[in-house]
Image: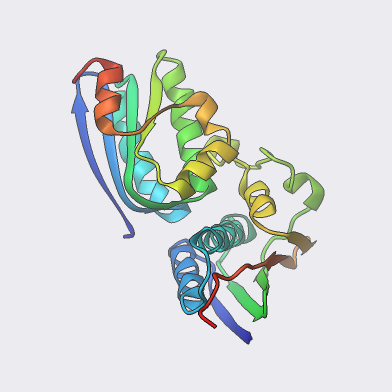
Length: 145
Length: 116
């Protein structure tokens, strides 16, 4: 089975909820275990939040692109922004690392994405933007033969 | 809004019953209201009832850690109750279980706080 969607939206916080809703709707038809659905929902929420809160911090919000590809039991999720970029990706991925301590950010976004996904890649260029690529292997509930 | 919150105060305890999804978008107004009430009414214990909360990501974790730091100065505590499996997972992955008290129901919370 093959399916995908690609969505461009403005990088503002209400669209985090919107992006999560889209991915859940997309998954609805696939007989997926609810744990997987929730993991994917959380991954999208964390990645899109990062794009909005960090990517477009202190600047005019721009595009966020969310792409979800499904081929058989492999799902790929791509979240891309064209904002500030990450200076030190490795450091940003460390648990509890946050640039916004005063604002009650837990610094766990990447950690949770890491745990809930099978592969996580981050491509970032300062001043150009950030692209987060996630791979997740799915197990479907047994369908009636 | 995708989060509704019912709040009430008993003595020095602030109860928040959350209904919906807690993310970076919905956490902002919650943070403002809770912080205001904690200061205004000398709140020492914050009870977060997650019975009708269907989703929480690391934004919610950040909110709880922030309130924890504030209440710790008053020797207070945060008590979480009625967590569904998905939220329980986030709570344990993030280590919130080490800084918060976790109870099954609001009734258990009241027994724990001696305000039943």
